[in-house]
Length: 356
Image (cartoon, rainbow, N blue to C red; front, side):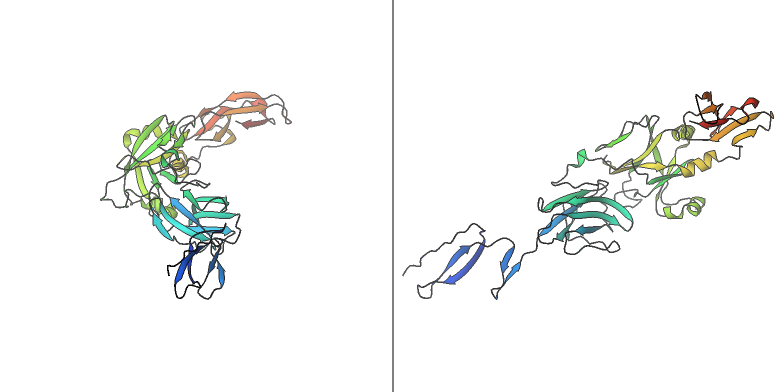
């Protein structure tokens, strides 16, 4: 007898094949039957719920993924404590990925890539019912639901300042000097960008809108001892130096927008950042000149002074009435140490002033 073929179709699903005996002797036939996606049958015939997951990808421009982990919260089976980030489940063309098990009917998942206290990328709300995969990108705080086009994503950010201008001619930045961090490998180029009127912005090509760009010399990892004593937390950062021919511009640079970028030997820009100026200001503009309302040592006349080395212009607003009113605007002049001053007439005694 030829075996009969029996097909059962249902509205649920399709790929579960079970071989069952029929009433044609010992011959069995395959019946393709469908069960809901979330239900599976085990060998004993009992049913169990299939775990639903969301895959989280992470991409960095510098391709340095060592030590980064995933912090997850919300409708997930195993929220991670901050002190113990979830390690990657695997790695693909876009970088490492994590498979996160979800609760039944999950609607909200929070994601954050971090290394200790350093945060790199995240998404406070992802609805896993609308996406099975998400991509997180360095310095971006929102998810991508398809493979991101990195040519349209900013290479770093100027809203945070990870580089430090520690002395008049020295900067440090915790970015490797080469792709693998070795001094013997093809080295990256570090650039200092300046905009007088803060017009710089970041695109997928790097920093645009700068008035001037100067190259920096890589001095390796040998940060001067006096700098390390003052900034021990910068140990291991790349030490960068300004060429002496550009040193005359430093005082002008501190009065505008300053940023750093790094460029690979192939021309790719993996990162950029703002710059903290405290060390350079201390080195160039520290002063013991008198401030506020004071007597000038050389002329014995009165003057008013304020220390503002990063200001492009300072004016004193003088008020004859303590309650305000229309001020008298007095221009101020800047010294080499960043102290702005103007003469204070004797008749200003017991009146009010402020700076702008």
